Image (cartoon, rainbow, N blue to C red; front, side):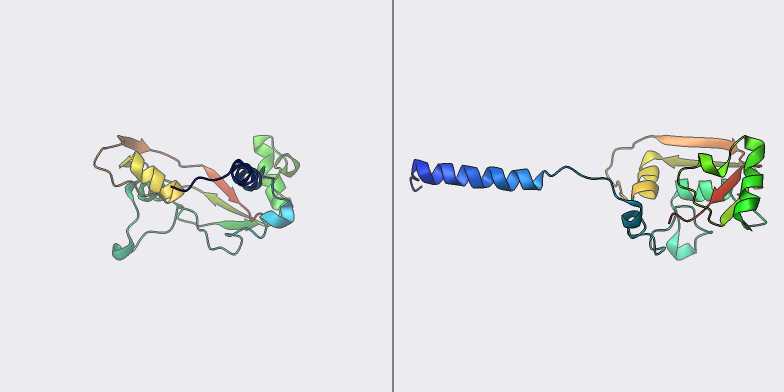
Length: 161
């Protein structure tokens, strides 16, 4: 191994410390304009609760169970900002209390699915929420929801601009 001079070692240490300080820059929050350009604003990221899967593209038990529990036979209704404000009144909320709401049209879905029972393991939750696939032999635990009843739940969805 070659022997380096003290000046060379000091110079290398200085360059390394400069490079590491640049790499550890403090993250800054995104502005609204930057957030609207983030991947997913174009619809490329879909929520984990999708319509019933085809046999070749089956959902995991967690996603399939939640999809069944939060189903609606009537589908979503589009609400104008005024209709949305009226729909919020019984809960004691106003649109101004929702920091991400900026007067967009809102899709309102009222859940009317029958109670469902389903089992899933925590690895299914990880895969559905983060995309991580856990295939190790060790179990992360099984969770069973029996007669999960979400009837009457109102879901409001609007686009973030």
